[in-house]
Image 1: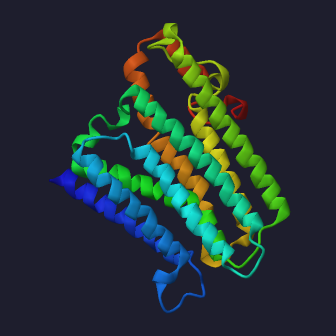
Image 2: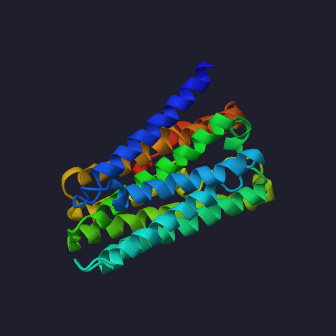
Image 3: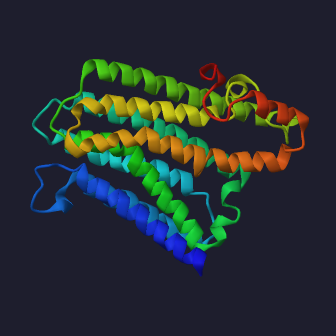
Length: 294
């Protein structure tokens, strides 16, 4: 009973926190009806999609559509934001549309990669126990909704704002986004090729980017969202500056909630007694590449 109450309370806090942010970063001109706010509409779409797909997924006890739903949620909001940008008279919306297109490229690549990987493997180890419990599985979907909302916070605020972007901020942001995206893509390719070799079955990867970080793909994701936040920053004002929470949230989520911590536990169970793995852990940082850890 205690665990049930904790999960219900946690879900309510997540929804309440994100909805409050949606109100705060919304269009300041919306004073009569908050439901007309771009940010509040985005919030409703994001969490509505999660609940709509969660229910049949729980009935059939499958996690196969979890990652692809995250990607489709990103795409849905990007289309919604793009539409709202194009119906505005000013300022010129092309720089903001370009920023949205960067996220779209990332979302299509990552969600399709994860979906194909789960299909090939037959399951996602993270959900072996979670998908059997209604509340635990529901929390995972709500967290995915929070992940989408928090990642998109800078561009939702940017779309709600009448301020334009800044060339220098955009240049720095695009450079960081491209760097992070390439790190994520290359590390995923390296791991996929490593696992495809029969002699590597059951072993851990410690080559390429994986030799300087135990989770370089997650590090790359953190960097690219930092880039998006920097691009959006000049167009923010007032409570919209709360969008700088995005890279902090992404780091904490990947490091402590749904990424690194779970995979580290699985790795320790598999190779915890392997001296090679012990040496790998000792010499390789868990997140930030060791070139940054002098």
